Amino acid sequence: MNTFYQEVIEGLSRPLKRISSKYFYDDKGDELFREIMDLEEYYLPRCEREILASHGADISDTLSQFGPKWDIVELGAGDGSKTVELLRQLTEDGICGTYIAMDISPYVLKLNQELIEKQIPDIAYEAIPGDYFETMDQLKAHKKPKVFLFLGSNIGNFSPKKVKTFMEQVGGVMRAGDKFVVAFDLKKNPIVIRRAYNDSKGVTRRFNLNVLTRINRELGSNFDVDAFDHYPAYDPIKGVASSYLVCLKPHTVTFPGGENFEFKRDELIHTEISKKYKFDEIGALAADNHFSVVRHFTDDREYYSLSMLHFENSIQDK
Ligand code: AVJ
Image 1: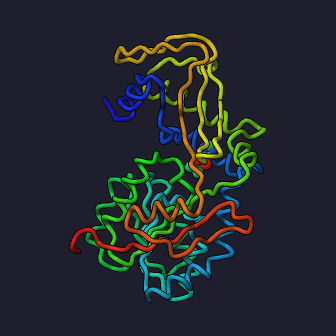
Image 2: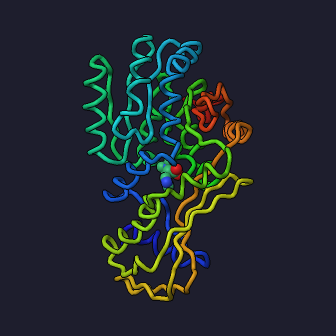
Image 3: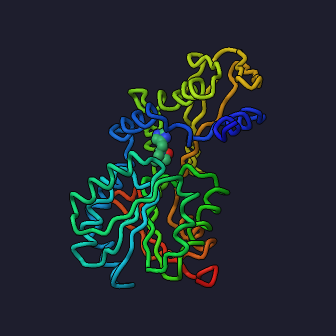
């Protein structure tokens, strides 16, 4: 039995059923997420591009105040299109060492390498395919000054516990003085946030429902996908956008291992959280994990932040 199967069974066995948002991203889910990124209501990617475009030189300057050469490690690098301009800036400023792209998809890493090496022919390039939670430890032997990049506001999808383990794991492969540039979506008018997760074309709805189609196909279950609807919620105090699937009629879902799940009418499956932050929460998160904030780079409206964190201590003797 694979982990996907086990995790789905475990999640559906809970009193409040849940499915992890990491399972959204099959081919169809990737395609729908790309569609989401182009939506007018989904402001996040535009903010991130604005910051990278308007503060690229600033980011490079700030790094050069701390040291002359930086290896750039990108967690979940994707096709490289987000990062290429920043890498170009760092290269022009003479502070770019090796770019180390990490991504779960070897196919996407291939695209990344093609794009980066074409755009920046002189760059030293390394690709590490695989789940970065598993491959990251390879970097323990890496003793040069490093900047880790974690873009896309992906940290928003982590539970508080997962955020903590993640920060600890990254700290565990860092040396004192290394930097961590993390993208955070910021708290803002809740109406803006709610619209981002409840778009008028219904793409987010299809994105959320697709996880059931994927589970049926890959795990052999028989969810009646049409019997579910998308329910997005936003709590402006906690800064948590949550997505649920609502069951519209009672039915039983069966898995090939013999597991059965009863769904009552109106029963929920929790599928995703997207946490929104304030600067002081980012500061507290950093401080809790031996980091300090160097600077928050934001867009003009302060919707989104690329926060540069400085690693204070090295946990092991490296
Ligand atoms: C991939 C984590 C940035 O939470 O905003 C988009 C995923 N979910 N619409 C987010 C997502 C619903 C997205 N991130």
